[in-house]
Amino acid sequence: MAFLVRGSISTVRLWSRSYASMSKKGLVLGVYSSEGKDEVKFTPYAQKYSESTAGKLLEQINICGPIKSGQTRIFWELGKFPAVAVAGLGDASKWDELDEIDGAKENVRIAAAAGVRALSANKIAEIVVEDMEHPQQAAEGATLANYKFQAFKSKDKQTPLPAVTFAEDASGKADWERGVIIAEAQNFARVLMETPANHMTPSIFADTVKQRLGAANVEVLVHDEAWAKEKKMGSFLSVTNGSNEPPRFLELTYRGSQDEQCVALVGKGITFDSGGISLKPSANMDQMRADMGGAANVVSTILALAQLKAPVHVKGFVPLCENMPSGTATKPGDVVYAMNGKSICVDNTDAEGRLILADALCYASTFNPKFILDIATLTGAIKVALGDCVSGVFSSNNKLWEAIHEAGSQTGDRVWRMPLFKHYSDQMCDHNGYDLNNLGKGKGGGSCTAAAFLREFVPKGTPWLHVDIAGVMGDCSDQSYTGSKGMSGRPMRTLVEFVTKAGGSA
Image 1 (tube, rainbow, N blue to C red):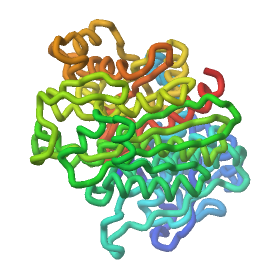
Image 2: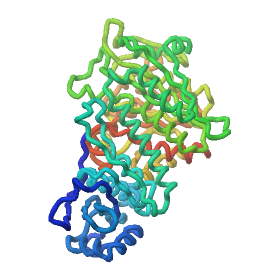
Image 3: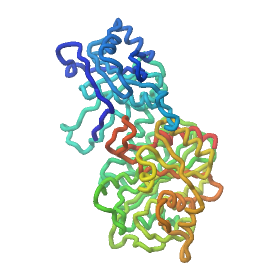
Image 4: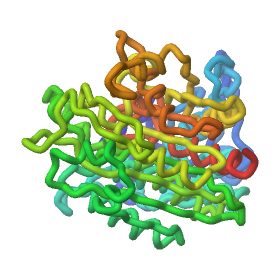
């Protein structure tokens, strides 16, 4: 996976020869800029470092002109670090109010990422990052940028990644460490999503999660097909019919508080989606290895919460299977029964995510949770509606919507509310021969009818959110620190922020 830093990276060399091959340690500093002004405003840490160079750093920046937001310049042999990358923090006020984002924090993520990438491109093996007045966000940007999926490349062809650490004399070390934990958990989600489907089957996914989360004191139960049959999960099992890979159902428990009621997180875990008998087009079908992005988000969110020792009680529910065509696959028009007894006509086997989530929602409801949040790469329609910069949220509870909306603003991974009108429910439920169809009657509104379908499996009175992340699954153009190519692991940081705050008060 390759990453490009937005904006240009210019290199100022103060000596006649390059120190890139000789230097092993570099520093990332932040500098603010305002449009139309040539003045340089350092962060407090960068100001001290500039003073330690007897003003030479400031002098060199002034020679070259302002460093704009997201841009980086590298200065050699200035101060105690052989290489100093000065990254532009821009002007947070330039973020429009309608962008619904904390611009100061987002600029820090962008700048820290740009600085790390610039030094890494110059073969700097050890990179130190200052706090940039927002140490958690600096850690997030730096850690997410210092990621490259190359698990299947020959060892001699893999690109070494630098060691990234926090400046010893910077402030906010605890916040930095929090940011590293969260970003590393998101990188774990990215690895799960990026791994080819033959190396990330339901069984391998379950084993990987059991090993990783078990080490973080999360209880991980791996249920098999016989258990699902015993629970009468006919909707979930109908999707597994066409595959030789056995299904799994993960049940995760993190107890960070003594609260009896849990927060329930449900994640779609289709480890490969061919569409089943309703076969997808061959173009880009390989991307469907990441159709378990919802599952990856749930497990990585719980991993981060556990490592942060967040004071919440959370349970995760992850149905895992493949959706494949074969002589035993579910046929269009077949009728199956969900755990709550409702009958479903499967008119399109490629609308399978809602089928496995239906039973997972039913099972999650048996624990009487404070609220349920399900997350899934559910519909291509959400990308048509919202593009690749925001997740769609359907919520039955205004307070929870407001909480997740604010969380998205703080993390830079935004969410947008979508409707749960009765109109969409009627399109899914108004049938003579069965209770629901997995396709809506009308044209358009595919994300909305999918949400309406899922709503039928959440008990009335249970607060619920459905997060459709198909648009931000991968190849996103809005976050330079996660890159424009590859699977993103989004919006995991928003879930961590949301559950931490809403989980203790909702």
